[in-house]
Image 1: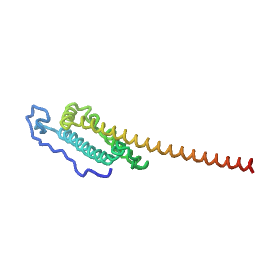
Image 2: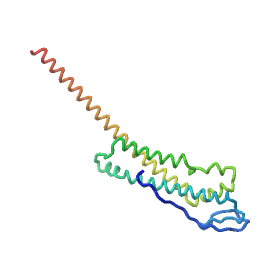
Image 3: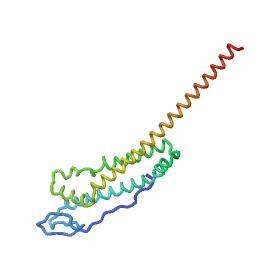
Image 4: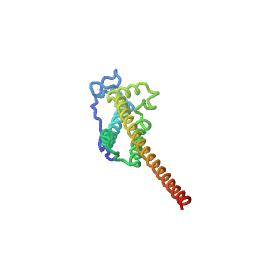
Length: 192
C-alpha cells in the first residue's frame, strides 16, 4: 500500500479503586484494584494494543479503497478500465496481505489463548475490547474487505475475458488467412 499510517494511539486514564472490587473500566477510565497485578495491567494494555493495530489496518484499508476508487467510477461510466493485469494482481496481493493480517495473524476474532485459563483476565480483556468496539470494527473492516475482494475479482475476470476475446479474434484472423490461402491455391490450381 502506498500510504503507511505513521501514528495511531489509544489513551485512557487510570486510577486505583477499592481492594474489594475487580479491575474494570468505568466512565472511560481504567479502574485498577490496589492489589492489581502486572497481568491485570497487561490485559488492559493488550486490548488497547489490539485497538491500535485495528486502527492502523482500518487506515490501510481506507488508503487501499481510495487507490481503487477510480475503478468503480470507470465501471459506472462505462469507460475502459485503466488497470493492467499485473496491477490488478498486485492489488489482489495487497488485499489478501491485509486480510491475512487482520483475520489470521491477530487475535481480533477471538480472545487470545493466553486468557483461556484465566477467567478474570479474560473478562477484563473482553470488557476492554467491548469498550473499544473491536468486534464491531472487525466486522465492518471484514465487510469492506469482502467488497474490495469482489471488486478486484470482477476486474480480474474482466481482464481475463478481454484477453480471451483477443485470443479468439487472433484465431479467427488466422483461420481467415488460411482460408484465403486455400482459395488462392484453389484458384491457381483450377483456373490456371
